Length: 432
Image 1 (tube, helix red, strand yellow):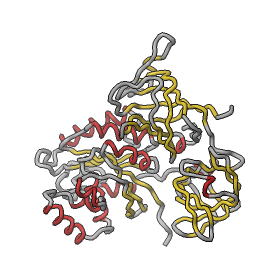
Image 2: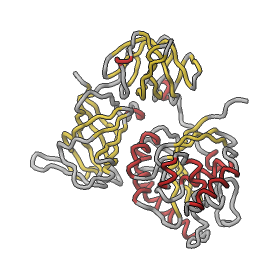
Image 3: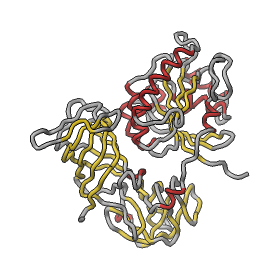
Image 4: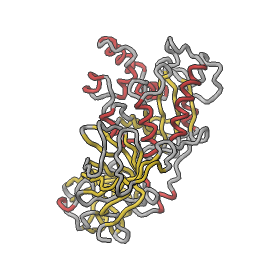
């Protein structure tokens, strides 16, 4: 049987709106987990006074998460629909885990936003919608969950109210509705509209969740394959009998045995001797593949996490500075010129300085709202969008978003939380 086309799916939304329960229900309905497992979790959950948490625990295999009742790391699980096989990336909802979500979402082909019909839109719902757009998500299913709750009682009016609120947010960041977004009323806990249409909501005539997943469109990989190779290094191993093996995910282009590659910013050059994925040797690998590879002429001390591999003939861009469009998600006071937090750029973590806040933007439309002048400096606070000039404190690879979207996004972290996220609109290369 030919392998079905593959898609990465990220689940986003407020921490208490039922993301993990929805994922657990999908895995149960798809036959990935057994009813006995869920029953075992249910008994554990009830013993801890956390009834209704059993599905969530299917994803939250980490003991620490179970004790705290929140999702920390990104869990990857596979399931199949009639048309696709999906890898689920379950993105954490808590604010201090937004960084994980940024690395998770950037790898997703589509998102399922879970929003509770009982609680409606929350601050985190807004944040995740903005982030998903900043990080390149172009299609979304909005699962309006907890329709079974007493105060909702499967009400069409309640569904429409939440749908209207979420629609405003999605349109505000540029999603096209209905072309890029499908709204579905569900109860993950009671299995309504997950694997079949629910008799409890005869007023709803759209697809149930599994049908909506099959209606998603595969991203066009052709354009990405044609681009130059860009592979951010996640780790470097030394393997007996092989030597130095850097590991990472190919964002654009392809890697083949015999290719002459360069690591930037270090500038080390070598020839690809072997490529392997899931412990299997391959002749070549392409966008989205997580690979380990051995390079002739490269020593373990030559390369480290955060470097980016590209063709020797078309090296990744090492920047002196870059201009970016950012959104401030959460900052306790004001951001001024000179502010130097940590930027998460691909797999690199680098302190960077806001050297110039050039323009404030209307966060909804992106239109200029206020421009810097010699006698008027701009400051930023939570909720603001802006165009800023950024100077890294040490060499780092970053590309323009329009040329390499996968390599042109970043998150800004400070004080243990995600302060801002953004995309690169211009670069000044080092030495140019």
